[in-house]
Amino acid sequence: MARLLNIGTLFSVALLAVGVVLMATSGQSPLDPDFPPLDLARLPSDLLALRPEGFLWLGLIAVILTPISRVVVSLVGFVRDDDRTMALISVLILGVIAASVVISTLVR
Amino acid sequence: MIPGLLMIAGGIGAGVFGSLLGLGGGVLIVPLLTLGFGLPLREAAGVSLVSVIVTSSAAASVYLQRHTANLRLGMSLELFTAIGALMGGLIAFSLSDRVLAALFAVLLTYTAITMARRRDPKPAPAAASATATPVLARPPAAASQPAAADPPLAAAVADPPIAAAVATSDEAPARTGALGGLSSAATLERLSGPGYNVRHLGRGIVGSFFAGIVSAVLGVGGGIVKVPVMHLMMGVPLRIATATSNLMIGVTATASAIIYVMRGGIDPFVAGPIAVGVFLGARLGSRIAPRVDARLLRVLFVAVMFYTAFQMLLRAATS
Image 1 (spheres, each protein chain N blue to C red):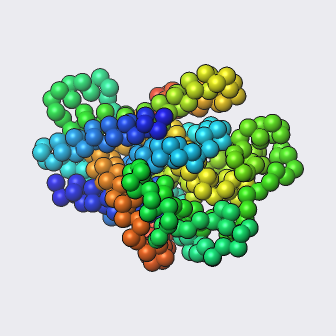
Image 2: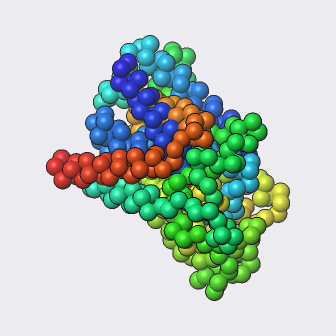
Image 3: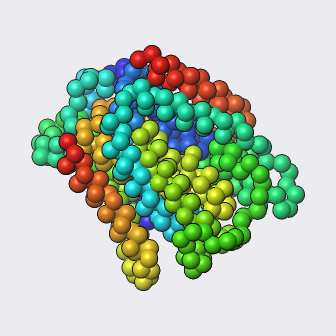
């Protein structure tokens, strides 16, 4: 689990760093009030076209996924140890996170 | 290009200080972005949440390796910080910049006072220093650690000043008292750890919920609430409370970060440079920690906090 967190962090920061470099080369200022929101449909083409927002958003997604994957790994461990209470708590945590996705899609 | 570089530099600064002082950096990043770069508070909070996840994940790996964090207690409370964060994330979008600024000023003041009240650990009579441990200036632990592992944050190596600030008395780990409201003895037992017993789970849950709201609304990790809740209310030794809090911050911030992302509240062009800077700064901080004068740093930090709180109040009053 520790290694997962380490790898996840390094991977996300690396993606963000690529994005930042691309910002510099394309002259994109962070202070520009317009910025592209997350758009998964655009992501593959943004990455291929080496647009900074592609790598930045992918990096941000990776950042957010890292703690979530830690919970999943913990869940697997608890199930294997037959620790039902903690397994349930892990599932509930994932549920809350899923709820935040759902609720923010609905509340616009 | 220049603003980007400045943001990276700012992020590095926040990362260094955050790691030396045992904070996630949120209390430094948000003022940096609002007062320094003129961002609206809510946008700053969103960016800060991302950075806080990065530092939490990086530090948590070390704490887990060293078995300092209490995973079961952390995850049990995490459920409630996440619920609080979810609510906080939704509330945040209906609060005005002025209200957010005022609330942030309160948080900054609370943080500054907590730091200022900290007493340096005295040479120990045996009972007293069960939980207090030397802080980062010259911890014996630090000298032997660097070869063994490369902790991303100094907090992983020695008790950071802000954690020690919470221990207003050098008390030994608490024993199980009267059973807390909703917890059975067996539950408490399962959440406890070597040498300590957890108590008052009910209050811990409420406190965690509140910590989650604070985290989501203000864009901070919330450790400044979580550590006292665990250490003072629940009887967890300080070192473990700090480590566990750090672990919990990742999930807490994630729950609200998702809301910020989906509501267009995070600017990737700001989050990128800041998060990269904070990550680099945290690594740098852990390396220079043994050479830093903790007390001077703390004085400097308290001064900066009070000044920033004042600026935030001005912003709330006049904008």
